[in-house]
Length: 215
Ligand code: ADP
Ligand code: ADP
Image (cartoon, rainbow, N blue to C red; front, side):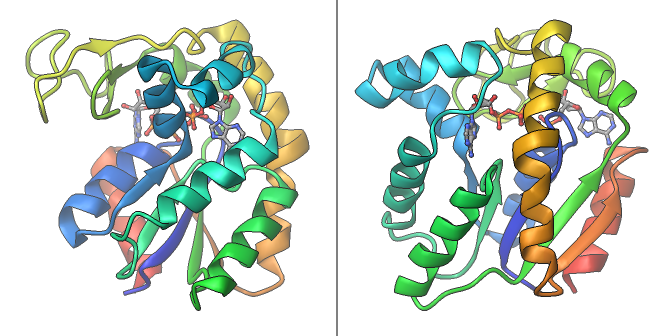
């Protein structure tokens, strides 16, 4: 199975949901730039302070901050046997930087999985999303509620609604996706490693489609 993976798609497509499941089944670490940024904010780091205005407005955080953060993450020693990038790269300069930092580590991207979900579904998913404050596990008020209201099934953390998960902010984020992130698919497309899958339907069904394109 391919193990050096990029999960790609608009906000709310299900990248985090599917990445967490694959991580559990195959022990491949999930690297979510959104989760790392939120952890930096809650710890009050300089990076967290620099990123917060962009995040709260649904805008992308500047490339240099993100690239240094991902480089650090790859240096943590658990990425030698595969990784799932979730929410990165989100711009072509980030994709170019990723190639550079992987080259230095004698690694490369095996597969880019593009989750396709229509915009109307995205808005329903994002406005109903709740996430665990400690592990970032995503839930949904209708489609995937935690067993106990407000409590994460995985680690008992507080399940809350992100400030940027409003209809107004998701429109801005979809716009950022169309302008800055969608071109990244063409960048990797030239290598023949992009696989598009239908991201609609039950979470289990989507997982089945995902595993099929990684074989
Ligand atoms: P992303 O990481 O791409 O932003 P998430 O994995 O956080 O997306 O999913 C966004 C929201 O949609 C969450 O509330 C999640 O529970 C829900 N969700 C994920 N996959 C599905 C699905 N196949 N059907 C319905 N809701 C889903
Ligand atoms: P979603 O999966 O719903 O799009 P994320 O948790 O991935 O949300 O990202 C939340 C916010 O964090 C983004 O709107 C953006 O401000 C910032 N962010 C996360 N990853 C990146 C990235 N690779 N480049 C720039 N900004 C990012």
